Image 1 (cartoon, rainbow, N blue to C red):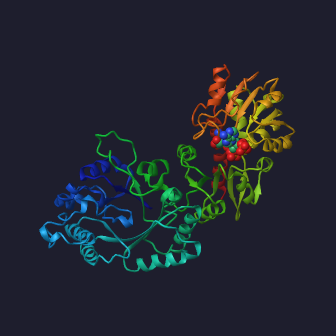
Image 2: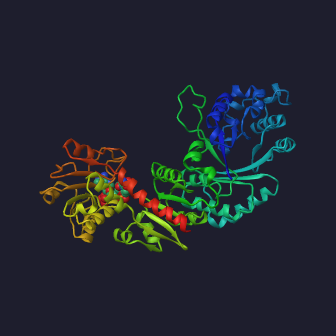
Image 3: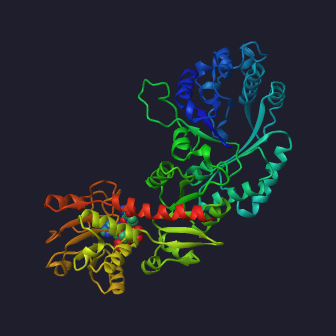
Length: 529
Ligand code: NAP
């Protein structure tokens, strides 16, 4: 089992202990970032040396330099902040380098004992610290931090060999790369695969792209993942000043309770969301909650994706069984699939990929999810009751394609208006609909109004919160104004409809319905594989 290691990043030991207490149930170990403690805290070295004894979990001792992403050498490393009684104490402290002061502190703290691990960066000799660690039975982590570009796939072998060499020195190698693309994450997955015979290691990707490597520490062969205490606290609470120690870190609670990190084994069915952006997606919350509530093994994570083939290859390495696909990758997902459902082919976009043999099967649940939400909002018995109605669809992108084909299938007559009229024309041609631009000269198409108005563009959503794509329309004969956007809850389009007394619905129920259909497919694929 991989463990959850809480990073203690507050400036005082008291605050750090408070955070530990709050997170105790969600963590297995902790890392004390001594470089983030205040100068006054470091003046009381005896209290610092006693910290492991007061800490309820195994502790990692870390004093990080700025070039490795730390703060040692700021206000907390002025001469004088060296160990009392040491050769460097008093006036002798002046003139010693920051690295010498750091090693002095390592040696002092390790000699006092109680630390389970000490993190010493690879490439820095720190021989006295190494010897103090060996004497005090403290396991040594040798860490490598790369904030530049992650290596290309062919270099994965080089990094895997480097990890193996480091491990042969009886240390735990740790590799942390800043991931700036899906290719960077793929490179890390390859390194993890090639170094699978190193039983004790940590490999992780920093940044939003790297987040899946933190959740899937077990798949990466990592002994633990790092977490922070992320719950909002009021200013007086002990953990108020806690912060993530590295970009892309998740909170211990999120890892433990949402992703069920400690239950993820080599057999756990894994699913993901491919999109860009994904940080505000509700899908991880929706799917992980269903897995938990239904007592099923399974984890679902958002994967920021700028390169779908690379993300799918990473998914293969991790043994992932399926994906949700969102903007802007739905057409690409269909293109890369080896098999597809009729709806996905008709719509020309897939929002679901399921592992099938060596490839992926494409499906689309947006269309049935949309119809289910529409039926609910109109309080109809079933979709067949939609037949004969007239719908205005605003937009001609992926979401509009799903709506237009679903409405056509349900026997609804469609009018499509889009900012780029040519795209409206092309989509309209697929179902024999009428079409136009968003300008007022399209009013002629709406003289008899429409029973349903479906807003499918991203207008109304940040950063276009104030944009109504059809401000001139009076919602004539409209029974329902439906907006696929759900954040904000009410777009300016819906607000105007409501002000005219029209019933409104946002895209949240569609999201839930399409996710439920997708979850059903995920569940079945998890059982049959
Ligand atoms: P897409 O393929 O990129 O299409 C974007 C559409 O928005 C195009 O028609 C585009 O017009 C139009 N547009 C963009 N900016 C506009 C503006 N300022 N004024 C007028 N029109 C504008 O994206 P998509 O996949 O269709 O997604 C669209 C929205 O639907 C997103 O907000 C997405 O989150 C939401 N959605 C919700 C659900 C759900 O379950 N609730 C499901 C799918 C999608 P042009 O053709 O002129 O560029």
